[in-house]
Length: 72
Image (cartoon, rainbow, N blue to C red; front, side, top):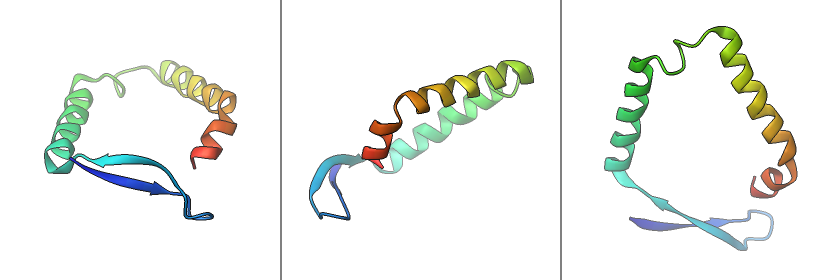
């Protein structure tokens, strides 16, 4: 796995790094997503249950908005 620098475009300062997982990592992610879809983990939930999850995600985003903005 190769390290990739994450650069702040405003300051050109290195603020972190991420890793290129390569084709194998992509294939594994796609396989897991497909298995989740086939299992009905998300699309099998009633709309109200899906809405509850999405509202929780929205609450978490609001709680961490400053951190997320800094990362963005």
